Image 1: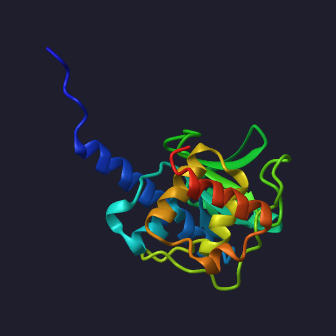
Image 2: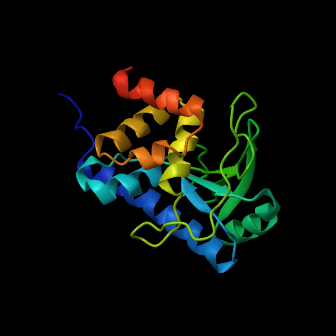
Length: 195
């Protein structure tokens, strides 16, 4: 006799855990007046949901861009919200004190700094008035998000870029904001969408 496969209830609980986490984090940052933008899979999901809610892909962590000069205020805000600061393999992050898992952590990227030394471009600067997801938290502008995904270009970044392409969000006006090397990566992705 086979044991039952986990139900959709577990899936729904996982999605709600991430949603609750991003609400706690962003509410704390807003209370402390810390500028931020949600990036990564959550930002991709928010943009994709605007075009086609059924095309949204689930993510398990929260990625943020902040200013390095705001790290102290960010620590204060997130520690008050129940998170603990960690540095893991050179990455600044926070983990929920009640569920201290790195996999579901809050990963920080600093504006105008390279995420990795080998990356050709630093993360874009925060914008004055970033767009907001329907839940109210700030997300990276589409141009910045596409720029960061093309810069890192890991497997999951290519998947996210394909999601944005599939719902026709990467329009010529977005592509024109990219430097030539990233335009070339986007062209390659369009020409061989399965690689």
